[in-house]
Length: 161
Image 1 (tube, rainbow, N blue to C red):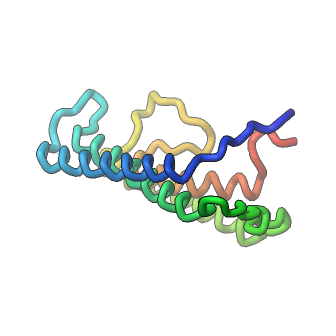
Image 2: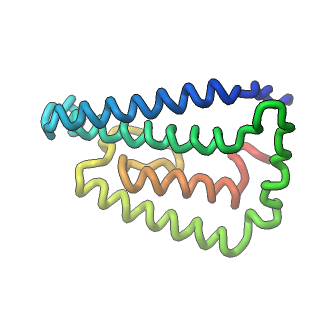
């Protein structure tokens, strides 16, 4: 099976996305200040402010990632860096320390789900989750992303034989 072809992103395109994500974040912050409400539940227990906060966090994450990508782009006419020098050798992925880290992250995720539920930041019980996904939509969700990364390091990607 062939791997997908990656199209290089120009520094100008990255800069444009970076500016757009910055502007989007500013607009969300402004909307949250103007709205100044904890009401307007859309039927799932989450307020408009909760949704705007989540959108602001996602936008900030995209902004940070774009900033990192801009810093990793070669200058005009410069040869791209060989990324293999940054790869972690396979024997260092599944170690006693990473397995212990995975166990601790899974325990932390379980506790964070309880905290999220107490704060009203959890998915209703009727929504089916995939293995490793979080019912919590705040702290537990953040931990679940890190746990997924470590789980993939320890066990390999899903479907790998």
